Length: 436
Image (cartoon, one colour):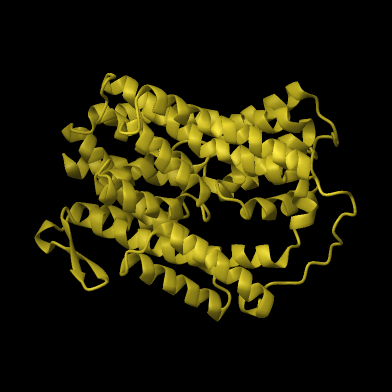
């Protein structure tokens, strides 16, 4: 039953609706976007279908979780900056709280036998979930030979050449913008038919938003630098995730590949299997999957707590990570939302986004292979041959239990179409049965 159209909901009503969305937003960006469409377009009719899709396409152009930014834009449209802030925060806070509790429990119990057995099943399920994400985005994104070539080049650059993730993203975007001008058919781009607005360009509001949110973004970093110094782990955490916030195109799965590269192999904050555990926890919580960053920040600070206790350090690490991950999201929306009607038909921007999306397929393929090796084998060695890097599994450490659980999880996902939560629950139970 549809609710009568409401073009200007009061602020209290907006808060109630977005709190409900924040509590129910499971299933990753696809499920979250579908949930908001049903609630805000079909039922409440706060936004037209055309404007919703137009804003969604615009949010795809920005770094960060597109579903959270879409919620922020809708709140901004209804009640200005306070509406955007309320909608964006309510989309994040429930999941952030649950993820914080789960991260704390993980840090305490991770060395217990039953807990390791539980996450044996979780990691196997995550492997199947990542394969599903790879197949979905491949079918949607690689509709030209040029896009397929970009995906292959991104995979080779990451898996064999060990090039940094930001270089792949920014390079793909630059290539896409150039190709959009010269050969738009290579990216399957269509001409935009809308006429840009004739109103003056909103430079003033954009510059104000950039200035205000830059200060908000930097505030905790200034506090950390002034009290703990530049050598403290909290500074490293804030710096790392601030950089990540600028290049988080392509969703949580693409970002996870970069985090695995840096947090595991670079600075050693986590073990390889723990990254899969973190994504498994993020899959069970509402809100953006990018919340897995909070898990990484918590463990990094928990394991180098001085001068705090481990628990307090973990709280500070998780809080700082969440702050520097989502403050930029608000900055992007409040800065560029007034431009949405102008930028929605920009061919070069669409070309850059299409190329980045294609490259992200290669990024997720790299993540899938990396996960598979570290879930199925207890030991995976690195080998170098000139500029090439190879992962070599230690075959005697093959874990048949993880392989069996991964096959079961794949059957439940692909054949029986089970939800992520149900698959994780069954896989965790199977992990307990086989692991103990």
